[in-house]
Amino acid sequence: MSGSVRVFAQYDRDFDEVCDVVVVGSGPGGAVVARELAAAGKDVVLLEEGPPFTPDDFELDGSLSMARTMREGGLRTTRGTSMTTMQANALGGGSLVNSAICVRAPEFTLDGWCDEFELTHSTRADLDPHYQAVEDFLGIGPTPDAVQGPRNLLFRDACDALGYSSEPMPRNVVGCRGSGECFTGCRTRAKKSMDISYVPAAVADGARVYTSVQVQRLLTRGSRVWGVAGQVVRPFTGELLHRFRIQARIVVLAAGCMATPVLLQRSDDFANGSGQVGENLQFHPGVAAMGVFAEETHPQFGATQGYQSLEFVRDGYKLETLWAPPGVFAVRLPGLGLELKKNLAMIPNAAIWDAIATCNRSKGRVRARRRGLDPALTWRLDPKDLTVLVEGLWRLAEMFFAARATRVLPGVHGLPEELCSLDDARRIQTREFRETDFTLAGNHVFSTTRMHGDGRFGVVDEDGRCHETDNLYIADTGVLPRSPSVNPMLTLMAIAHRTSQHIAARL
Ligand SMILES: Cc1cc2nc3c(=O)[nH]c(=O)nc-3n(C[C@H](O)[C@H](O)[C@H](O)COP(=O)(O)OP(=O)(O)OC[C@H]3O[C@@H](n4cnc5c(N)ncnc54)[C@H](O)[C@@H]3O)c2cc1C
Ligand code: SF4
Image 1 (cartoon, rainbow, N blue to C red):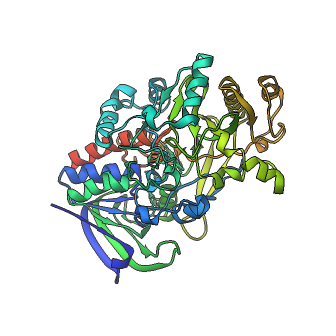
Image 2: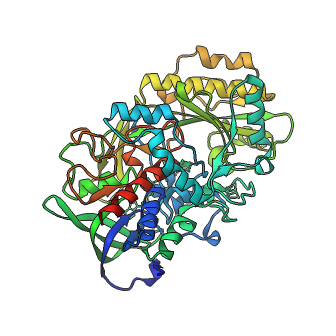
Image 3: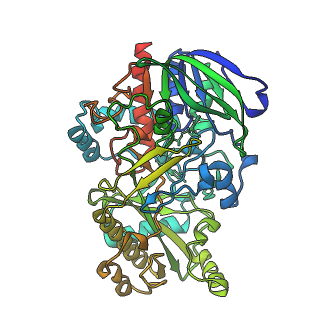
């Protein structure tokens, strides 16, 4: 039985639907749940606020692309410690614009979650079959050398020179051509983002997918939820039109770590007797530095993020290569006018690498604003986590010079604009920094509806079911009880895979 995908142009009136399971959000969490339940023969409706994008819709200009694919134009920012954080608004959610990095969380992290959050079946061994199922479905594998390009291979050389472990990035791609365009959308369709993988598979198994529909509240009766309601939304303008209601036996919220708590708060604080909804906001923020080499690196060629080092994960940070449209990172280059022009001219000889830090001590909160569904975010970087980010920055500089970079641009206030030698870079280790010295970015977000074995301290149990209600589930990164220490998408999909099996067994 084949389902359907409805797009904005096909709505001309209010509508009501009935189904077994309604899933809100088509990112990595929601798409996995929708497909697995449809494959199990359940009647599934998947609702997504954003539109579908095809290669013809992608914009190579980074700013224009952000304006079209991201919430708040990609400029959403935390208060407290100021940091940008991007959430997509598109069929496929973050998977449309992300770098396709798929890494299993380390054993020590998952086992640590179990101890700290009173979980009984969330060790690495428990999740391994779910990781495997997702990896098999998406064809996840290491990035081949042929599409690494010099800026990724220089990272490997640096790790080899310093004796640090490194590995080609595991990614959900098939036939990647190394165009480095993951951030603006993969024009070759090599990246198996949800819109071209799990969502079509759900449709093939009968799921009905509605795009350009904004869920605005849960429909509840006592301690149970019986559906969701909202309005059709015109792409790129936010204009709200026809109303809809979807009635379901089970509701799964997968609207993302920022949107799901807002939906619950907007629904008279449903499922929030614990007071934990929107609390415990955590990020996996990163610092990036640019190395400049004597020879050309041709940075426009190569898998967007092709190499990683897990050498320092136990110390609280992970090292990676990074690429984005030049316009996106050019705003961080020093200088104005002629000087900026001179710095931009270095890009053909440059590589950018980043360190992302676990930052479990740094917490914040998501709150609904008086109007609309965009969240108010507060977050504060803990001084000890700042120390870890500084350590990560030092490690990047050390690696650049080990790979024979001639200069490193750290992009941090209080340091020279260019570090010209390893000795010069040692200033990173000796200087006292403040959080405001760094330009941080945090696109990995967690824990605002965290899982906990005890309903007083968390929102969902290990199966993703809300402690306070029988038929409401959550399947986005909000359920991760803390940072997975590595990029979160694969761990989220593994957890969503487990949640879908639990729901299927109940229906
Ligand atoms: C630029 C970038 C690069 C990244 N790179 C990687 C990477 O390489 N590897 C990795 O592991 N992680 C990466 N991440 C993070 C990863 O993409 C996210 O962790 C992941 O997408 C989260 O999945 P999710 O299902 O929780 O939420 P999302 O992907 O945010 O999906 C939620 C969906 O719900 C929809 N939605 C929200 N509110 C409503 C509503 N009211 N009604 C209907 N629909 C709604 C949204 O439009 C969205 O499509 C990256 C993130 C960004 C922004
Ligand atoms: S590097 Fe290019 S070809 Fe490869 S997955 Fe990303 S956008 Fe697609």
